[in-house]
Amino acid sequence: MIGKDLLIELFQAAEMRRWNDKLCPVPLTELDKQGHKMAIAYVLGKFAEHSSDFSWIEVIEGGLFEYFERLTLTDLKPQIFERIKANDETFTELKTEVYARFRPLIADLNGLEKRFEAYLFNPRDTTSRKVLDAAHFYSTKWEFDIIERENTGDYEIDEIRRGLQRHQEALADVEGLRYLALFPTYRSFLDLCGRLRFQVRWGQLYRVPRTSVLGHMLIVAIISYLFSLEIGACPKRRTNNYFTGLFHDLPEVLTKDIISPVKRSATGLDRFVKDFEREEMERRIYGPELIPKAWQPEMRMFTENEFLSKVTIDGQLRHTTSDTITASYNRDRYNPVDGELVKAADDLAAFMEAYLALQNGISNPQLHTAVREKQLFYRDRTIADINLSNLYNEFC
Image 1 (cartoon, rainbow, N blue to C red):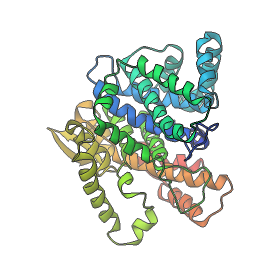
Image 2 (spheres, rainbow, N blue to C red; image 1 turned 180 degrees about the horizontal axis):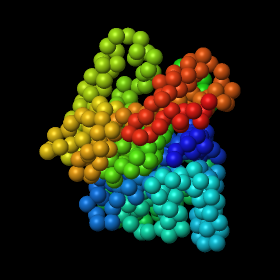
Image 3 (cartoon, rainbow, N blue to C red; image 1 turned 90 degrees about the horizontal axis):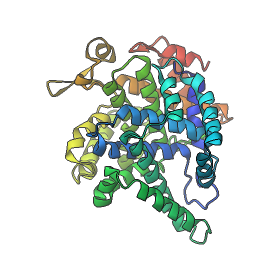
Image 4 (tube, helix red, strand yellow; image 1 turned 120 degrees about the vertical axis):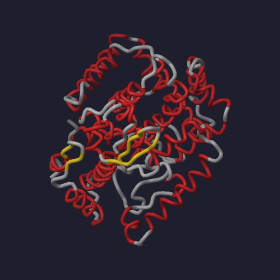
């Protein structure tokens, strides 16, 4: 079951700086890189989902496993890491260390630790894995384009550029990368997602670690997926819950983050913001077709009424409850999504942001209030058989 220790581990990447030996105009963290990577993986995966060896579950879990890997190995320079990978014995030792660190934290999650072991030690060359590799490349190249302009005289820049070029050539058969090269609008969508790196959560408060909106979205996606494993969700339900978590705050790139106390302080402000977000999504994403029309209903499901549970029956989207989904609609054909669980994951991520800041010595009345309010709200509360009260009690 998901617990305190795993949640704390997930946030370690928020303070892991990337390109920390280069001049960076903005902080680039591993948490943000992984969030951007998974948004890119969604776009590349949509172009690949017709392939017989493609699986959204493999993409999501592979992204999680690679996240665990980076949490352990992220301080290694890419050049050193590539040399280690070429040495089977040394690389196996490193992977064993990664597995030993995270296996106890994901035990009893519907066989996730077994799939983690297989992903590390018995990798399969599938379309899903190529999509993840391509997403990793694209997100790294996106960062490099920022870094390159500030480090024109750096002796390593040419070498890094050549390495990225070789990586891109090795991924020439990934269909989605060809579409990104052909259609600037699709690249614009991924750039829009990347901008959420620069929007800091709780912007009016000093916190350590500081998290961006994009980093927060990834944490919510991961927690939503782990909750889904706990309740035995069907594959489509797991996938929907993950991507609802990953994209639930996407409209904030158009409106910026408005903290909950401000939304609650003015009557009708929350609804006004939601209406404006929908208008902006229509004007700036759906209208110009930054994503193909065929994907738009799914993206609307992820970003509109994102905290309501839904199923699709006879082609119609219907609101329901997570308990009802578990009882009657836990099948791929109903396209279920647990908005309630995603909301619980969103609240838990916000709780962790405040809790960790307090643990790191940032004493602020608003942080104390946020922690206390979440603990009180989820006291004696269960959603779709997830006992949230027990989880919050671990932090008392």
